Length: 172
Image (tube, rainbow, N blue to C red):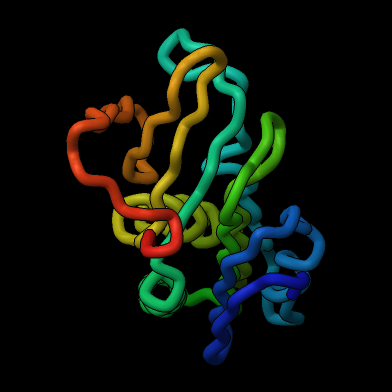
């Protein structure tokens, strides 16, 4: 993988966390198989858009409890691979700052038939967002950033300065 990356691989399942720009071709190549009639790739989680809830977004920052996040990613990929009869699945999540227009996650799946690949790719994304120990901080133009779980559609909540905070060096 790229420099500054953490990764796990078991059988046909590959997962990674990196601070580097994500490479679609590298992730697709991890799931190629002569038995696969379809490769589906999802790029995003998305691609950092320039607004959320009517507010201008400057960037997103992702943080993770890396060791646990990798194990959770591998477990969910193994389950999805078995359930959908995949030939391969790869999931790579970006950490750190993700500027507007760049991807936060790449998920690639290969299967003998496209229908299973479509379903597996969507399920992998939803499971990742629901279960993997990754958090994001939304940075808005002209406002203080907001941490939130890595889920769709839910606005972050500011933590008042009077409450204790976790130093960056101790964050998961």
